[in-house]
Length: 186
Image (cartoon, rainbow, N blue to C red; front, side, top):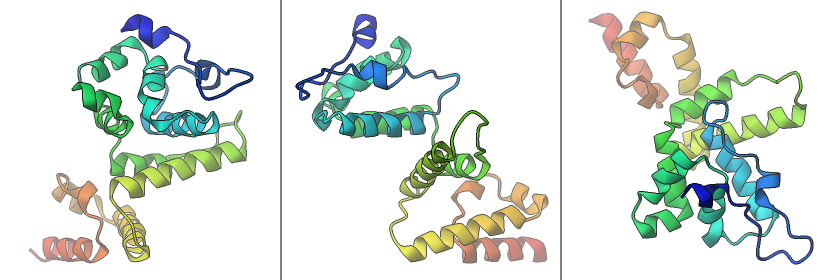
């Protein structure tokens, strides 16, 4: 497995020149990189190189450290070859939840050595991850999510503490209001 994860991966679909994916996508570093953003970059580069999606898992394994590649190897063979299932497993393993994406989105700052375009890309990736994880598909759901997020930011700490176990899952502004009001009147 270690040899597989360190072997250079090239696209079979490209004629000239053959590009090594590991030269375009740096190796994942679990101490510095965020898995959701890393997978977004990986997917965009794989599409750019016209790599067939049914081979993405093999390319991904080549860009991961051996300990993470072994997580994939432990999966059922069919699941290990299904990129979407591998992606879901990695996001769960690295705990990239909807609330974590929201935190990344809300707290992201422009790095002094990055461009405004880089910041846009990071914010866009985090926002898309946030709404995708919460299965937001309509304008009204998005509107409720953003309003609930603003209410949460302005809610006193004692109320947040009371709902600590479910706070990240409260994304309906009316439910937030009702629970807060009920807590304050009891």
